[in-house]
Image (cartoon, rainbow, N blue to C red):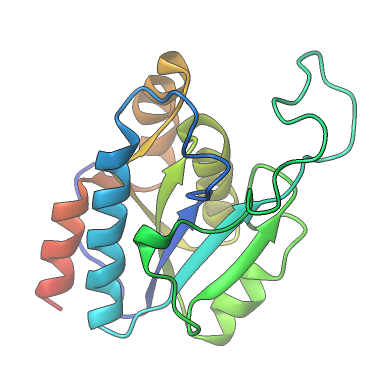
Length: 186
């Protein structure tokens, strides 16, 4: 499905573009992802629409077959949102300890209080943080849009699987520029 419209109250959710994550080897150059994230951030700010900066500061409890990538104590600035996004005091900040930004946080309540009915989801990693957040947003009744060129993953198969099999069932997909263009027509 291609992009059709953006609701009057659409929020931009930026997932895990933080100092501790951008050094991982990703499928797509992280600099390009950051540039597109910044372009979207600037476009949302110009229109006075909410921006949600999500960082991850741990993992969900429980046993898994694959150990978490982060072990030990991370550097002090590991969870800091990258400066390239030009974080503002008006931005909504969410710290998560699970893959998705809605689980175990107050994000849904904060968005509902602002009248948000749609979210645009971008960031890293496509098959974990971005996908889990998009799934949770969909399950909570938000319209979901995914900027497919403003996300990446360290695992090519996970990135491709999300774009091909999962995202078409959760919402509409387009490029960052497609979304910026739609914002311009509102």
